[in-house]
Length: 563
Image (cartoon, rainbow, N blue to C red; front, side, top):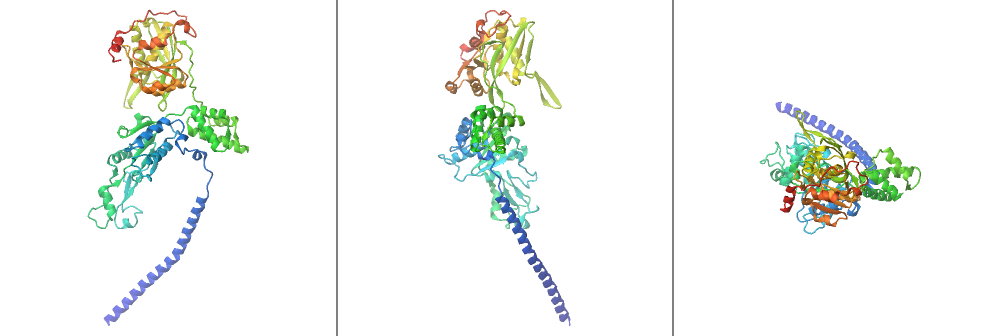
């Protein structure tokens, strides 16, 4: 009797279970066709999206495909080749303004490196590109597309291994670039946390990952995951970072691990060349004069291409295939493009005007006129055109300090007075017109020359520019950015540049402009100050100076060979 009851209960349970699984199976069979239909519709929609393509933007069509297409960066490309195309490629940071070919140059140099003798790069070496401004990461290490992360089993989407409690390492860009190049654009914008992680990877050439869910004794974890947690993910690559920031704004720890290259800003004629060839590739005729007009207003190659693209749109609206002057002028007007300053210098011999040299923007040299006026007075000094004071420090504690240019002027006046110029009887006003910022003492020699000209009424040679710091003993000290300054003087149409003797380079011997090293202020005055009769105009004030007395300390220093 009991056995019969148990048999009936077992039969009922079996029937219930069978009915349940039968119902589930029928529901699954009904669901699968609908899922397949939905998947098919989505796949078909995806294929239609891929089949629909707009015309290729002009910026992509004119992207450099060979080194000769990159205008104006011959020195930068040569430096980049020297760093990457060899047996021991190094990490590198490229400085320069936007739209001048940094990314394209890095791509092309890697391809050249693959073909160079003794290179460690294989033929299939990857080029992984990331933008540091949008590299997202999670502080809990859930997601890190740059360095890599671990997908722990507690997180949604962990997959079959996650169900089994297995943590899964996910490689980042540094591992994907293994054996190749990681190009990190705008590297100066990288988050400090990511920067520190990146520096560790550069040192170790691997990524070490951690997880609270990993156990070295768990035999259920696949062997490759054991290997990753034990030895790390390989990340032996060469970093090429690009930035528009100045070197002082980049992490010193990163700079110490990288070589540094400067891609200069493009000159107007180089931008015009880009504009002309862009119109040609777009299938439009453009006169050279119109391309030069674009070069006057576009600050980089990308701006030039954008202007040409809009001009081409105007031409298409009127069903013509030529870009006209009125098209370019309308785009410049509507886009509020500002004209680039004229580079040509006034070479007239003038009293109280000297050609100084400066570094502006992205390490680009520029000429600037420095002017001075001397009037009867009591030795008062006035300097304008630059900030007289600057504030440094945090909000809680700020310090005001005098401009270094102001301090340089005080040194100059002390020196000129020692040389015999009666500075105490005259008020001197030195001005830096044009809004060019003057940072540092590199305008010291120029200020001394223009002050001497204003005090004596002797004109300054208008074909000569000068740069250098001057000490109170009359010595000319070295300054930075001299190669760029020499190029600026050459572009401005000057014939001679006076530079500190310690800044002299052999390459200056091959320039079209005369580069003359000087060790003392006396040498600069002798070369630049002309007789009164050579002036474009002569000051009404007669010369108020006796014959200059050489500074003995300067002469002694020069004679000893330490100048």
